[in-house]
Length: 197
Image 1: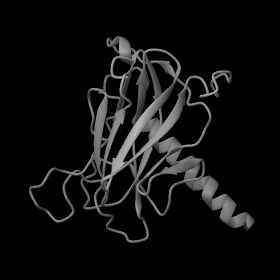
Image 2: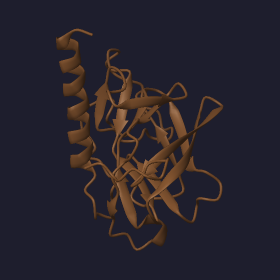
Image 3: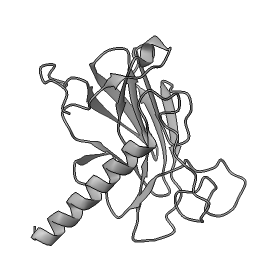
C-alpha cells in the first residue's frame, strides 16, 4: 500500500476515534448522546426522504469505508478489532453498567441494524449508540442513506457497559441475517491481556 494511502487511512481512523471520544464522555448518563446536525446530511435524525417513518439514528461522521482497526460483522456493521476495549468506571447506578467501554459502531448507510447482548447476558451488560440516553440489553441503529455517494458508511458514538471486565458476545442482525461477535471489554477474550490505554 502506498505511503500516502496508509497516511490517509491513519488520519481517517484517528479522526473517527477523536470524534467518537469527544461525543461520549465517560461518567455521563448520556454516553451514547451525539449532537444532532441542523444540515441535511447523513448525520441528521430525520429520514432522508422526509417521510414520517421512524427517524434515523444520529451519526457523528460519514465515511467512505470502515476505518483501519475495524472488522466487518456481516455485510453492514463494523466493530473495533482490538483484542481489548478499555473499560472505565461509568458512574451508572445500574450494576450491569458499572464499567463503560467507549467505541464507535460503523454501519453501512441505509441499513437498519438490531444489536443485543447474547442470551444470558441481559443482567450483566448494556449497549447503546446514537441518540440513546439509557443503556439497554438491545439497541436498534437506523443509518440514513448517505447524501454523498462517496460516503457509504456512518459512525455512531456509544459503546458497551458491563458489570465487570469480560468477553461479551454481541448478536448483530441485518437484512434477515444474524451474526455474533465477541468483544473483549477490559480483558481479552482469551482472558489474560490487560486493557490497552
